[in-house]
Image 1 (cartoon, rainbow, N blue to C red):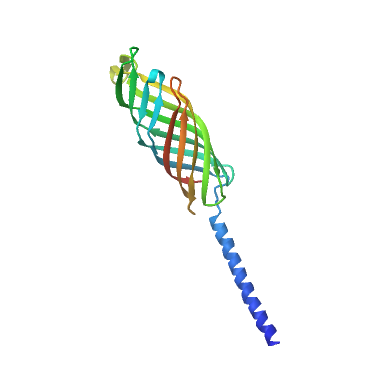
Image 2: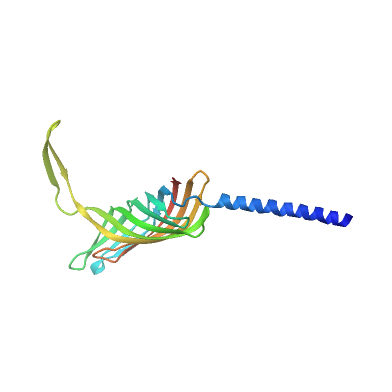
Length: 227
């Protein structure tokens, strides 16, 4: 009888311990589970674009240097795994352009370009948790401005009701807007106060018309909010 009581007591203790552990695991699982489903989110990011070489016609080339830039994203979480977002980024990398004349002689131009990327992405989070790896793919367009004049300066004049007759000069440059696409992979971590962080590596390709496609890698660090 005594042994049965001891056995029952041990079973009670073990049952209580198992119940406590189960409740702890349940609480931890709920604590780690993401709440981003059916919610909007936005982020600000800093990025580091890597150097890239672009080959043009008749051995002309552009050597882009590494640069730091900024950007933002805005998107909607369809569920814990799938995010649809708009991604904008801006950089001003230095570059060396090798220009080739008809007689084969070369001369070099060193300058800075403006590069703006605007792309729509599908982002897949592997786990429905606050910490998860993710991958993305997307497409959109990229605007490139060489900041090299494509002709003589122009002047525009007009009558202003406050300042009278005004003339200002401007000069257009070689620029283009081209189709671009990307893939990326990284990690995402969410805090309980709806803040989140992302760190990723992104590879983008810009479909240029008179040269090989520009292939540009970049590292991104983001801070954002879910709402």
